[in-house]
Image (cartoon, rainbow, N blue to C red; front, side, top):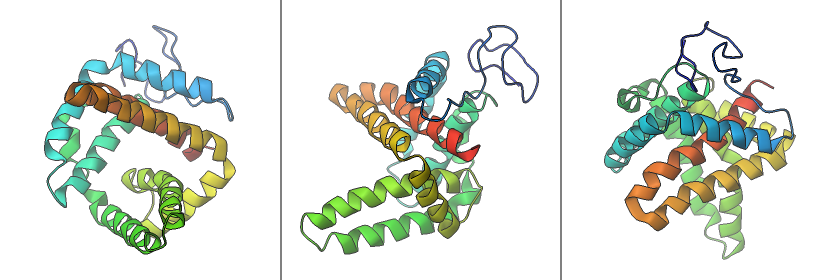
Length: 211
């Protein structure tokens, strides 16, 4: 496989690059959000060109109804691939994750229905919907990663949030703020900040997945 930092070839499954010394698929120690953020930032900088192109194409197609569920899965899988040192982010990745489409559709539909029901209650319902979105987010990645069905993914999501609430909250808030910050610079900003925001959350997902 290829080192995501220096792009040199290294042994499959290697935990450290023999050329540049970088830790591959960096999973920060439990409770160490700073290391997690640094790992995400290093991956983002080392793959910036590929990630910008990937995000640009993704933003052009994500507006297509229903099919966008598959595109979201493909985009996330491409970032997962980069985070694991399994290769570069490629535009074709966006269109190659249809195997999880059914489970992801069900997962998102259930979240939508739950949010609509909660939204009936003024103010508290809106807050509950936000909380539900936070609790359910790790499960979205679990479905996309092809590891779990919709119901199983939500159960895992709830369990992993309970086990590492602070780091999940930090990853969620910091990642979201960085991703949304690109909107200030309109389209150009989003293609730069969106992949970094997602990479932060993916680093936390990888930590929880391998715990």
